Length: 517
Image (cartoon, rainbow, N blue to C red; front, side):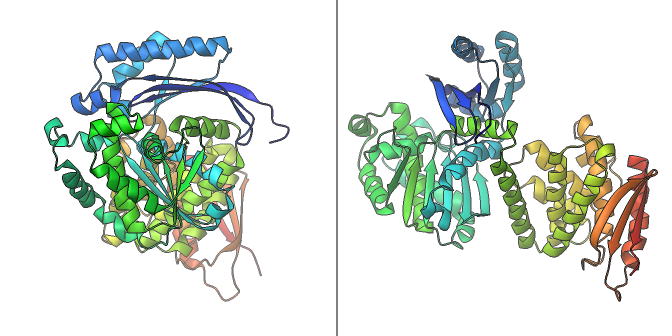
C-alpha cells in the first residue's frame, strides 16, 4: 500500500490458555512489521468451563498480566490499544464484573467477541494470505479452525464463499464433557470417536457436496499436530498429505500421554488437548477426502491485529469479504426456497433509497449492509409456514451463525426481517422490545426503507428499472422506467400503502413516479 502512512498499535487477546500481546507497525496487510510479542500462560478457560466463572484470584492475575503488557507498550510509546476476549469471558457468568475490574485497574476496555467474530477475524488473515497462493486460489478449500470452545468450518470455491458453519465442540468443551477418570480410561479414544461422530453427523451431507482440494488447518492445536509431523513453529505454512496425517494419528492411538509428552516435548496440558484435535481432524478428513493439508501458523491474535488495521483503514479486501457474506446469505435463502431474483432486485432498490436518504437517516454504510442482508433472508420463514413467515424467519436467522456479523448485528437483521411485510416495530413485540434502545430507532428506519423497496417489486418480476431517487421539497421522489406493456399498478398501490410507516419515521412523503415513454 504505497503512500499509506504506517502507524503503531497494540492488540491484546484474553484467551482460554493465557493472554498474549502483539505490537505492530501497520501500513497495510502487505506491510506489517511485528515490533514486539509477549505471552503469559494461564488456565482461565478450564476454570470457566468447569466452575462457570473466574475466581477473584484469577481475575487479579489477569489484571497483573494486562498491566505488565501496558508497561511493555509504554516502552514503545504505544497509545492505540485494542483488547479482545474470546471464549473465556464469553462463557464466564461474572464477565460483567471482570470487564469492570479490568477497566478500573488497567484503564483498558475489553471487547468480548462472539464466536462467529472470533472465527472470522482469524479467517480474514488466513484467506488474505492464501489468495496469493495460486494453487489454493484455483481450487476448493475447506478452512478448519479449532479453538478451545468451537470448530469453524468454511468453504471457498475459487473466489466464492460457499459454506460456513460453527460448532460448539472445541477442545476444552469436548474434554469437559467427560470426567477425569473417563478421560484416563483405555477405552476413551473409542468413546471420543463415537461422541464426535454423533455431533458431526448432520454436517457431512453438506460438506460431501464439494470436492475438496485443500484443507487449511489453523489454531493452537493444529500447531501441536504439526510438531508431531516434525515441523517447527517458525514455518508459516506446511503442506502435507492426508496419508501422512493418518500415519501419525494411528501411531498416537497406541501411545500413552506420558510417551507423547516425552516423544514430542508436549506439556501435560498440550497432550490432553491433542486427542480431541486428532479425532476431529480424522473424522473431517475421512469424509471430505482432501488432496492435501495446509497447516498454518496464523494465530487469532495475528488475525485480530490484521482485521483491526484493515477496518480502521477501509481496506478493499474487507469490502470483498462483505459481498461474499451476502452471497452466502443468498445460498442460505435458496436452501429455504427464497426467490433470489426478488432479493437481488429489492437489495438494489434499498441501496438507491438509502443513498437518497443519506442526509436525513443518520445511518452508516454498515446499516445499509445489514439491511441488504435482511433483504436476502426475509423470505426464508416461508419454508416453515406461509402463515406468520416473519416470525419463522426471525427464529431461523437467530438460530444461524451469520459469518462476519456480531450477535447484535444478527439480531438486527432478524428483527428487520421479522417486520418485512406487516406490522409496525413496537415494544409490544418481544423481538423488538429486547433490543437496546439505541438500536430501536435504527430498526424503525431500516424497516421503513425495506417496506418501500419491497413494494417496488411486489410482483417479484423486476418490472421497475433505471430507478433513481431524490429528496425534493420534503418528499422522497422515486423515478423508474418499465416496459411499455408492463402494468405496474400492483407496485404503485402497494407502495402508496407502505408510505404511511415511512412518513411516520422520516417525516417525509414518498412518491413513486413512472417516467413517460
